[in-house]
Image (cartoon, rainbow, N blue to C red):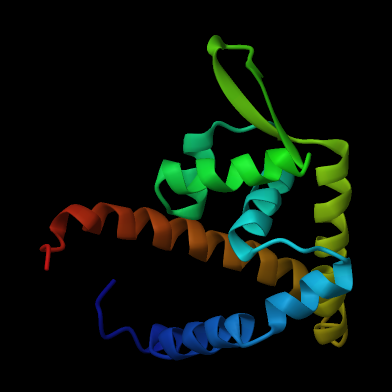
Length: 161
């Protein structure tokens, strides 16, 4: 596909606008307050990752999904573990390794947060057909997967500053 593809010319401005909308001031704070949660964004992100995975994950898997270094995740996990929102469990494939899983309290906490967010989406997209909503989720997932895979191949090609 050539770089002068007219069909995709509006993509970056739309993605930038979406990012600005989702990242705008106080939105995260509003959602966490509505859910009764007093956690920082990286900690909530870890809980979302664990909930969406539906299975325990290694620290490295969480770090990869967050696109951060492992020590950053470990610091966040230590705090979440102190609050009894996550726990370390043995890896059935390697007894020396540990996996991270949500505790029942962690599951309840992240479900409250996700309900707030999902209610916002439900309200914002209430005029959309169910088919359009499903297409959005499918296509957005495909975009994220394909763009991530493509950009991962470019990392080695980008000169260090």
